[in-house]
Amino acid sequence: MTTAVAAESEARQTPLPDRCFLVWLTPILVVALAVRVGFVLIRQSSVQLVTGDAYWYHFQAKLVAQGRGFLHPFDFYKEGIVSQGADHPPGFVVLLTILDWLGIDSPQGQ
Picture 1: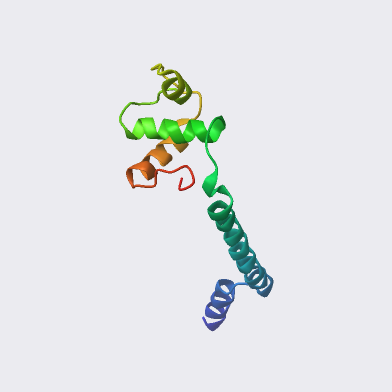
Picture 2: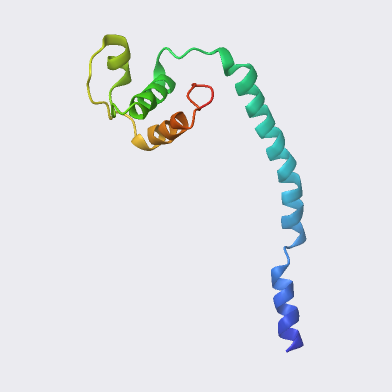
């Protein structure tokens, strides 16, 4: 029975190469996250949304958060036309809507 216990305890231990990989991977991920957060806070804080996917997702999420539904944000905000707009997948819009409800309502915050 002692051999079975010894074999089980050896199976639970992470092999040395895997631990070494994690030791190197962790600081690389921390530095990458710091660079990304720094870029967003410093460089992207003054970017204005005028067109493109970022405009679409942000302003469609605002429309959903206001209870207006999935309207086409270009038509609604630029032309005042109310038209359904399901041109993009709704999952990301729903996530941004939740962030908008939580008070994170700027394009940079989202």
